[in-house]
Length: 343
Image 1 (tube, helix red, strand yellow):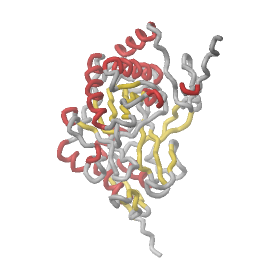
Image 2 (cartoon, rainbow, N blue to C red):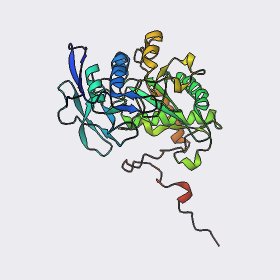
Image 3 (cartoon, rainbow, N blue to C red):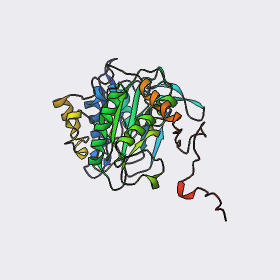
Image 4 (tube, rainbow, N blue to C red):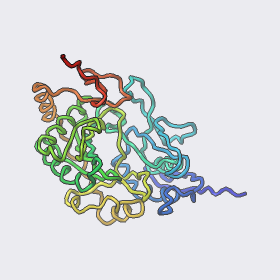
């Protein structure tokens, strides 16, 4: 029986490369009927914008054994048999362990990842050449039950203004689901923990200004019907779907960069694998200038120190992290041991 595999010729900075695509007709998104071939074509179409956002960074690949309804796992280091144009850099994980992490530098490497059944691409906030020093401050706005994308929009606009006060230029994209991701380019001069503290400082200030709409509470039982500012996405080895990355949701959405002027009328469900290539052709990449004028987190770190002085300290880390200095107990408030009642 003849193999169904196809060989794609993909142009790049080092000429044309041949990338073998096995099972190109395999359906990855059953609802719209999008196949592996369609995914490869999408990645080629958006490659310049995709690589500008996600290339030259350590990246984790969210891979699916079948379609999006199949088993999934994350790949961080190059698998055996990876082509020589797929490189890796050593990175340090929260455990202190050092390990090679994938880096994607050209369209052929991105399509190779799709051949390996990657659906979602998760880039680090730092460059491959300096993986300990983020050059992006990233803030994840996560609508909680009872809220939705429309509730995140005014929060994102307020966050943009707040970051401007701190000397930072903000950019926005859909998460590919109900939330929004706000990025600001920064000079790569601070380690992840300090950038996390800058994010916490911004989140707390935003919460003060919009207490009925915004929460920084880590425990879900305390968040209420508000938009959660997920400060833990700023940690080392914590990533979110990259710009122009597909998402493993039924209608094949994409985490899509937006101009701030289009945010209030945006429908996140409209940005999909089928629609985003034409959007890029017509409107261009709203994030093309993302790294033109990086700022510093000095003002935000000043806010962090101010909050420390007023008694606001460290916030909880994810459960897979080692216990961190100054961290409060990792105990759900409703399960925390209450002090003995005096009789």
